[in-house]
Image 1: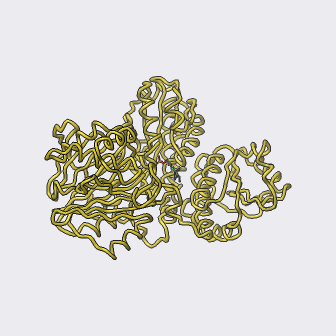
Image 2: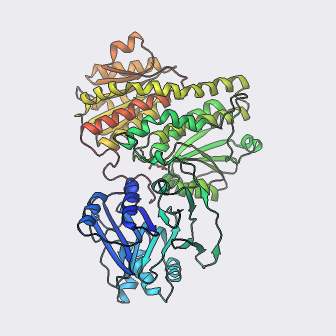
Image 3: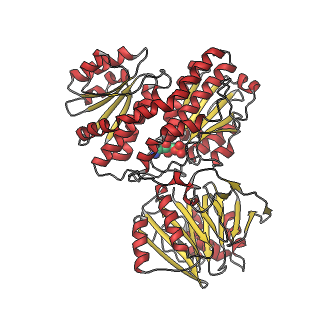
Length: 609
Ligand code: M6R
């Protein structure tokens, strides 16, 4: 949560920082602020509200300088308010700190510092860092920060500017992402790569326990003992356009439409057309190791957890390996029973979700092999895992995850085939058939997107409803959960996803003529059972919106609305079926006047527990 952006160079810092913060606003948007150094003097402007508010304040009362740091906040400690917004300052007003993360022992530190005479202006955890640096400052700001961080416990990405060192930005990382980008005669810091892609693709990602000093032309990296660390710059291959809206009204809509190309990118290089062999370069698992695995535990949060549920079905179906799915936050504190024959698969778009990262650590401590399915290259979870498979979906900016989900499903599908082959349950011929189905999928996704107008019309009909029920069976069940989550997130409509058969055990009591029930009527062996569930809803007056691939008479008669998706295999149908549900959530949110890309109370990467 929270976004940090900084600039140091020969140009005015504020325009860069504001633009960077706008791109990071998905990480939090309850308050924002900037600090600059001009002719050695520190200036701070901060306010409650979004970056736009900050921009207005700065246009009324501009601040200059070629060095600066900015912050967009998602409150954890201390309510959203002007005093609680970042940057925070020490008593002298010479040091300004922006922070993403949580200082867990801040109360204790605050008490000690207050006893020494420090005066606090906010109720945040972050402010202790500014005062600790002040307390420890002895002519070298980097040293003061290193000393302070030995006293602080918790997670942080920190950026500090100060009148004490008017030509540098001091940074540190533990648990929260921070990236340095290198341009010509200028450098940037950012919480993610996408926010700086417009200026540079040459980066260094800080590792945990690292601290650095950035000047316009130099960057020095150290550990907390101030031992120098050598780190090579990486080149990021993301296209800068992918971090822009490119004519779409919202990132969410753009990312829904990007799904065909995103899946093409996911597959590219992983399947050799001539021999249909699946390659995962960074998986780091030998065939022998794959064969030894006798249990799979998926761990994830939110939408990625729904992808894991589909993974459970696929691994059991294709590879006959017992699989289960754990909420990361539950898994990490549950003393899970796993061993070296267990493969833990962490699924995450950002690679920075605190609970999933904690689950990865726990799994490693317990001796399991851990691989992650991740979108952000070089992210914490990718680096902490023994192996990684990148989804290659490109930056996902909309808070509601869409293309990350469908690309995760494509990876899980390929992994399940790979494991199925190694475990001897899928032969060459079957593997070729399954892979060909996936190769055809992007084209079918393009066809699926043509339902957009139809979905918009249905959204108009449904947008005033205050509740919705989503039902599915088999692999349709996780899609029901995902459809309900999308609607909740962006339109604030209460929605529940259920296995359709469970409806009669309780939720059926909710059904009346005002209740929209979205039913995943996917082709396959459960289809007739789903028709039965539709009957049950209709008998109680509910409004049925079916997602189906067959124009067969029974469904045509029973459902009030049907959204047709192209035919594909039962295992890939979730990837197509989720698209109309993403669009439905999007259009209902629009019609309800909700802020689609920045839903209230949410942040894109949940880097706190
Ligand atoms: O980055 P991750 O995939 O680890 O994030 C997990 C969840 O926070 C995320 O999927 C969240 O539920 C999304 N907002 C869903 O749209």
